[in-house]
Figure 1 (cartoon, rainbow, N blue to C red):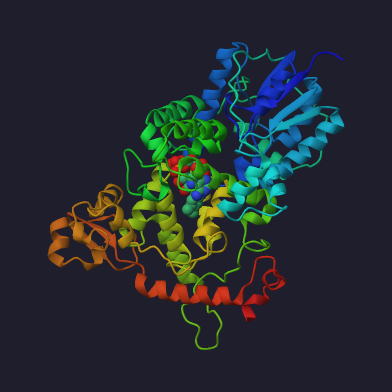
Figure 2 (cartoon, rainbow, N blue to C red):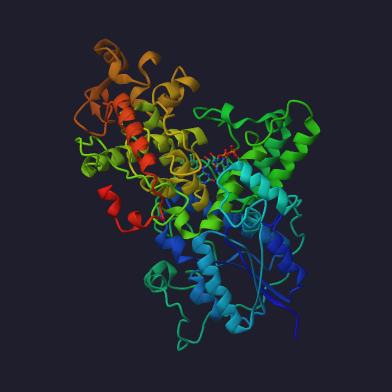
Length: 566
Ligand code: FAD
């Protein structure tokens, strides 16, 4: 047998440092080595991805491509515009491939996709090599050490992780990469697409931009936003391994910040700079290895001595939360992202339990709930702190963890009583760091469906903001209509006197309109969409009832809809 001809398939591991899978590929000493990224129709079409996350992905790809080129001028990241399920069998044959190597991914869609690819490779006689590198520990190993169960608390994660063993030290990036082989893509036209014949792959063929799998210029280039038909991105946050490593260096250089970090003491209203690391998008795209992040922090902590913070509040503790959600998802599989069918999430009959009319049943007024969701998602609820957070998220694709708490609690059990899946969908579109496990898991936490149960502890859109930022500078930054309003009213402008509103040049509109427009030389801002104090009481009472009914997502009565009669 000749020397290995290896495709390295980059996915959510857009880096060269600390990549066990990449190392395994290079250890084969290939005679031909193709670093490849394939357009995945799941990502391109099925998952909602806003323009900011697209830009971040393209940044990561461009940076990786130039890092590859620096290590071998004949190589780069070769982007192929076709679904991996239909593309790989053709590449295996045309490029005479012996090995396909990739980083393990335990997301439920990725597992499904990868098992198809593994089967196709077997049929083509191509050897598959995978290694984990997306988390501190292999999530499947964590689940095994947790008795096959999802990790539903940080203590369970830490105990299971301890049993798996110590977190591996990061491995350096390679100095050199082998030459790619020849890359014909003029596949035999008669060759049928192999099973599964995904509809999405046909859609790809119909799309002009994707018509040629090597890109419009046949050069396997990273796409541009313009070519993809997107407008300009609005986020100031840019992606790529080079930038991620520089950001980490800067954080680590501040030993006191790194060693004494306590998450609950970081502020959701801090901006320019933010109070936490903002490394989550780098971790999501794999531009930063979580194990490098962990060990660089831990080494500082070990050298710091007394006064260093500890998990779960410390920086390493934050990475444990990430691993907790990944392992929970790895155990539960696809139902982790939903309420129905998820045995580990309480089933809560969301929407509007406005009144039980004495018969003990929920009466859902979903048109009202839809209006509230629309205002929440647009940042026009009339609660300035909530609106500021949503507007920052829309513009920048990132908000602080406690800001996410506020938005999620308000939409679900602490205001609107709307299903957490609706909020998770909006976050999925807008977040730069959208991670299926972390998004679904945190929404379950905040809505008290799983992980956390103290539903009577709600975030007030007034006092929670005031706690961090009494003057309301954060609100002024994101809700410019209220920029000139006295600090006394900045979180509750509906309480301001006419004179105070006139002085600030603002009109509070009560007609359900969005606000932000000009009325003469004044700006408008909506009145609050409900009385928060009243809604809080209604929500807590409804949660109490839901908890006492005690249904979980896998209950037959949930699946067949008979819970409505309870
Ligand atoms: P830091 O505080 O600097 O923490 C360092 C790293 O630890 C983060 O980069 C992140 O990877 C990890 N981390 C910290 N907190 C959490 C947490 N609670 N859960 C999981 N990982 C954590 N995080 C995502 O990465 N993707 C998501 O899709 C996501 N959706 C969320 C949805 C809701 C409703 C909530 C409340 C939180 C969500 N989070 C999500 C978790 C958290 O808000 C972000 O990870 C964090 O704010 C990222 O900012 P940072 O990098 O500055 O975090």
